[in-house]
Length: 142
Image (cartoon, rainbow, N blue to C red; front, side, top):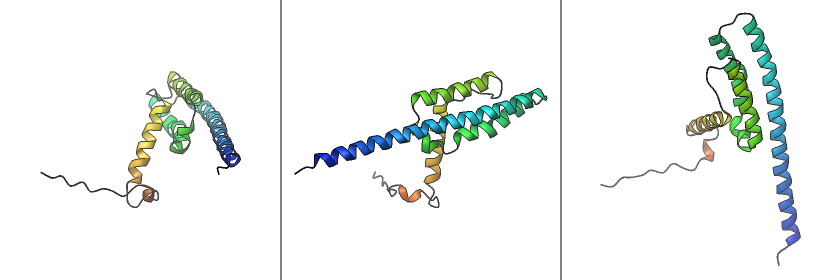
């Protein structure tokens, strides 16, 4: 006999966990963008002091892009379209103000960081390597 009440409870718990995860991702994006906005103010002050565009771009990469990239493979996959749009708008605005040499998008950063993590995981000394399936040896027959 199937206990439908238990199945309903499990489904409701999963829905709540997903809702909480999406909410915490939203809070993370809000806090991150707030911190990045404060750092943009610092870049404006440095530009007003006569710092060159090349140096501003380097500092932008170190202060802001690195902040967006921090743990991005973990939380980025849970970001909604609206959240990624807010991050894209922030990065586009930074490009418009001359702090970045190139237009950077959230999806571009997410793809690069995920690929980088996967490549690093393939090393036998990486702490996450054990999570990967064993390597298969393909023998080509001629």
